[in-house]
Length: 373
Image (cartoon, rainbow, N blue to C red; front, top):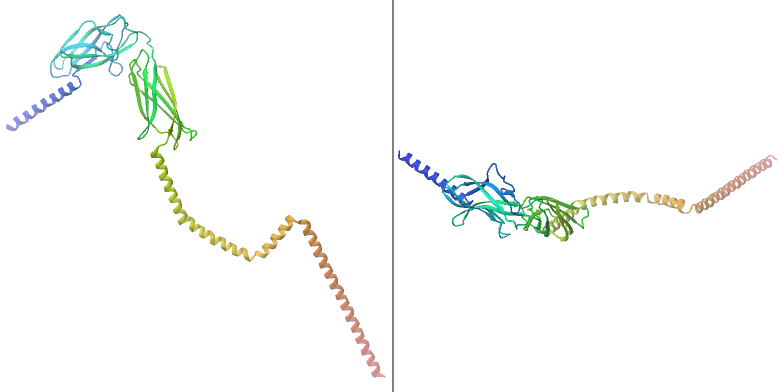
């Protein structure tokens, strides 16, 4: 029984703590939600209301209030300006007092009026629920379109690229100079490194941010770095919104210290690698090649004279062919003369031998005759 009572106490305490925490979160968020009635104006532009009302005219609108707090709320509903114009130039015709019980939902009809002296443009403000002390308990953005076919225009104030950790940071400031809010902006960026022809970077992205008339919008985006190691970069920037566009062009010198150090490190590593390769591989191959060439030179030396003669003949054939013919003829004549002299000497020798033989035969015959007689 004691355990059951303890369990119930802890359960009630946790439930109460959850209610308190939910109530604290609701207080932090304002506590009062302002939403459109289902049959009235729909929410547009990120949760905001949008009404079309001409200067000097009135318009009846309907809103719904929801009390998310765990307590009763009393106060009033008002149409507040955005601060840049000093006033909204439109207001509720009658003060609207509210009283909401915890978790209560209430539908309201409000008659608003645009001042006759208001210029035709878009005015941005908000619905606000405030208590008796002026503390805002809830709000929702409101756009009042005072006129038809409002002009939309803008102008780039400044643009630049700065170095960031992971590339380049694009920052563009532009002013809404038109009569209507800019709701979506398209950015086209193109840049080329002049030292690395043909290497072009292109970036394109959209920014869905509402910029009211007269306000300055800022676009910040991290883009990829220019291609190439370093060098002068030409940049072309185009910003488009609502059929209008504005462009800027400029140049800057890009020298990424991190990329340069990275390349320098790789060059050092490659140089060391080539040196080691030359020492351990190319040097050994050079020794093998030297031995092979030395062996070939030895074989070539044994046939040097024959090769020299053939080279001389080849040179004579190529460089002095007429002289070669004269030398050949001279050699042939000398050989023929030598052969003629040899033949004459052989003939004389044979004649002498015959003469000697005949003299010897005559002497023998004479001796025989003498003996016989």
